[in-house]
Image (cartoon, rainbow, N blue to C red; front, side, top):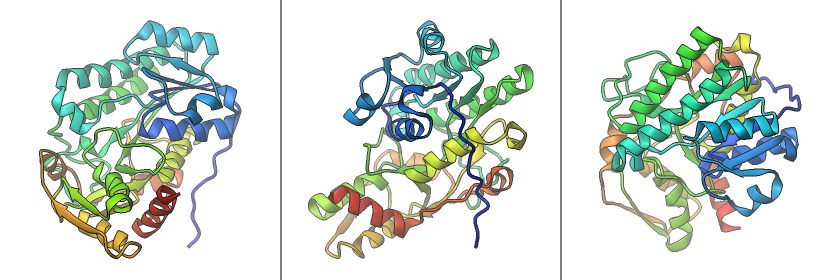
Length: 323
């Protein structure tokens, strides 16, 4: 079947990525530099990143909660677009609720207000499947449905979606967003999320042929390989504004699986691999989230289609981690 995924038209522009050293930010920065030119994509974070990121283009030490500091970088580099990737993720946020709220919400208001004041023209802000809660339909979770998140991270993301929508309707701010599922990458370490097991398991499979999972064996969650997430992020930003119908955030989907299923896919490549289970506090978070996501609105509005399923993901992860 032919994909209707529309290839974005790339125009050179000046871009700032806040939180560029995180799991998504690192790969997003490198992908955007490849598209727009190294000097046109400014990476920033509260700490320095890996060698590839630091060597490939401009970098600024930047606190995402410091409005004045962000404004200075925006003015200095004549930034047009901001990708705000700084956040405290689900598992870590449960340990530090107020710090998570201050970072996740304060940083969003900083960039929304810069756009409201016409200092930047476009924002990408990531949401998450954590916006959904125990009363949300579990299978094929619709674009618009009951949310009621039960985690600090989810509450901040749901609030953020509402503010994005408000700033678009009230001030015409061009803000775009995706509800990321769990993300799997071999290039960067996970950052304290409930779906981190789906990255750790590949490392442990190669290191010692065994993994102890912190979620129960039949916990089914929506997941995505990082290449698909980066492609979706750039695509939603490059799509014409007339196609962006959802100004809160778009459902995004690729695959759903359980720890048992990911283990089975690894065993096809590493037959001696063993998995066991030691469930911790993250199980309660996972139980409040959907098992699969309906992304048909993203498909209809801007042609989204995933390229990686579980088998292709496992093959790619093991091959690259082994190298």
